[in-house]
Length: 364
Image (cartoon, rainbow, N blue to C red; front, side):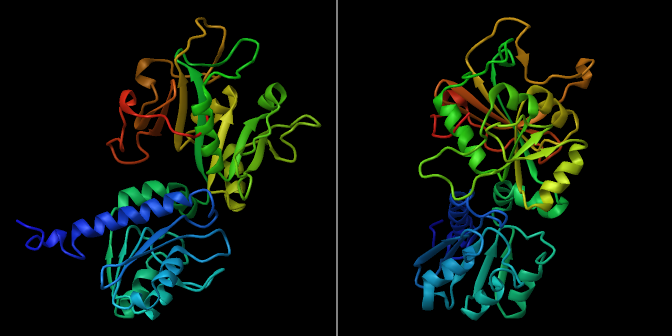
């Protein structure tokens, strides 16, 4: 069957919808570190003549992805199909409602990846479009969009940030020497990737012990520098003069802390250590993603600092088991991303064979 005979490959067919939505997802991913606390959204407008116009969410106060793409399309938006990775807003916030702007522009059809769980939207955007006579198709590339927007979606549903636990370790599961030194277990490519992970996070957390031993700044080191540095959080009290200051210093229940950070607009919290802090978050079931940078090295003994410091499973049946999200090679190191087994679907998402994956700039 040639494309003209196959409905899925015709303009507006399933294949075209999926391919165009994937492009919108690429646009969203490119602005991931710039839009919080707003969601990072990508949008593509395909005119009746086949021309495409693109947009992505701008930093807070700037236009949403749909508005950027509509402005690029101009008169070509009339009769067009608009693809967006998240349901268009239908309320006045820092900007005018996108659903209204889409309908006013004369767009004939809107393809949405996922519904926005924000209480101000939650189906109202799609309903506004339908009332204005716009055809709406939902659920295209929904799993990919939900994965990309996971921190935003969790925050809107629970009020808490998405928690990423980042660890750099040897293959025998150690994160520091007996004297506490850990610089550097991993190589430059892994450390660069960790910087990228930090740039995507709205807050970075370490324990006071890590502050005393390493005296980290917990800032994003990039060229050019980021528009905003993440909020710095210390569990316990940082010593006077520590480079991490000023920082939020917290004690007590971690759940309460997560609620407070969520109230500050923190969508993603990066937990960087140390071993006791990692154990607290892990044992409390508070981690949404584990990112491990594994170096091809051994301390070769049982006296180096383990990944987790605290009581673990008493028997094999009590092992914590997650699912692999991805495995990538970064220089000589491996980047392993894990999710709790019950956090998402039973199947892993895009696991890459590390033996065939190229390293990429990042941090670790």
